[in-house]
Length: 103
Image (cartoon, rainbow, N blue to C red; front, side, top):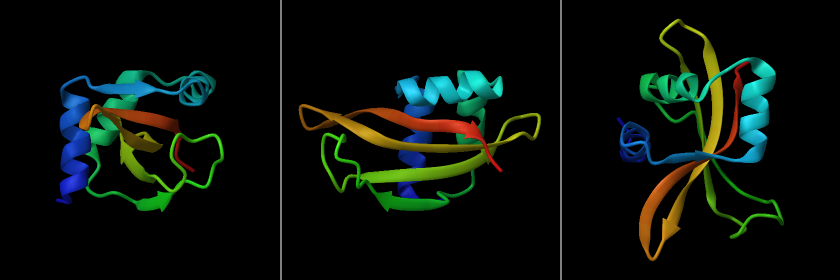
C-alpha cells in the first residue's frame, strides 16, 4: 500500500481530519455523514490520483491534492479530495476539500 495512503488512513483513524465548508455541503446534499467518508477512506486500496492545486484561493498554489475513491461498509462508492495540513512543520490533519458520492 502507498505510504501516503497509509498516512491518510492513520490520520483518519486518529480523528485528525477536517472538512471544508464545500465538503460539508456536498455531504449534506448527498445525505452522507462524516463516518461514511471515514469508512470510504479506510476501505480504499489506492489513491486514485494525485494532482497539483491550481486554485488562487489555496494557501500554497501547486500543493498536492489526493483523490481517493473508496466504499462505505454498505458498498456505497464515495469520492474524496484532500490534502495534509502542516502546522509548525508537523503534519497535523488531513483536510477534505471535497466529499461526495462517486459517479
